[in-house]
Length: 77
Image (cartoon, rainbow, N blue to C red; front, side):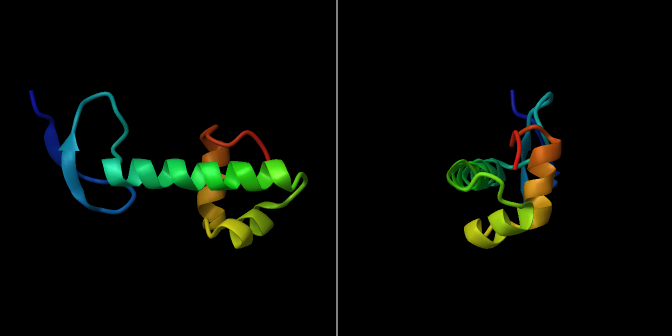
């Protein structure tokens, strides 16, 4: 049973959405996982780094890092 077609809340692309999962397309899920991994590795190797430093070093926008922190996808900076 297929889901309904909706726009991704991140990139705006259209994808088949299944009830009960976030409104994020599979491509953005993969990108976000990769971004979180890069930031986690940077923070692990650079304890005490700020969000701005992590953003500059990883290429992940500071606002996205802050959202990942707020959503619990990153534990701390």
